[in-house]
Amino acid sequence: MTAADTATLLEDAADRIADISRADLQIMLRRAALRVRNAGAVSMEDDVEEGLRDLAGELGMTRNDTIRFIVREWMEKNTYLPVHNVDDDSEVDGTA
Image (cartoon, rainbow, N blue to C red; front, side, top):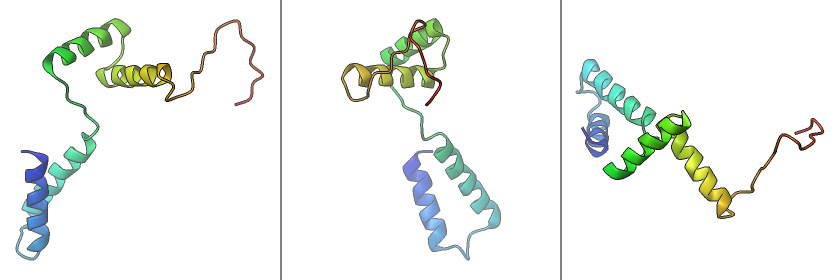
C-alpha cells in the first residue's frame, strides 16, 4: 500500500468517523504509524544500493549511518558545514 493510499483511507475515515469500525480505524492508524516511523528511509537505484551495502560493510556501519556519513563529508568538503578536525596531538581545554 502506498503513502497516497494510506492518506486517502485516513481522510475517508475522518469524513465518516461515525460509520467506521474501531477495528478498521485501528488498522489504518497502525499503518499510518508504520509509515511515519519509516519515513526516514531513502531509496536509491540498484547500483547505488549495492555500492552503499559494500561501503557500509567496509566501514562497519549501517546503511543509514553510511548515508549520514557521506552527506556530512560532502557538506563539509563543499563548505556547507564547518570542518571539525581534531587529531590526537591537539590540545583540548576541556570546554565545549
